[in-house]
Image (cartoon, rainbow, N blue to C red):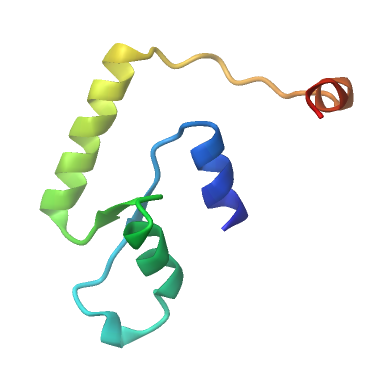
Length: 79
């Protein structure tokens, strides 16, 4: 969930697999992310196509900036 919070903090779109039946077990975190709207559910091919469409819209509005690593000094300035 730290990764989920970081993605939200950096305004990154997050998705997760959401099985057709939660009875399979092992997907409590995925269910939580979808219910709290921290992630977009992907259950099938149609959902995946919708997600890719959203990503294309994001790219056209906000060009991807080159990633960079912050140093310890940057951390201290932002604390």
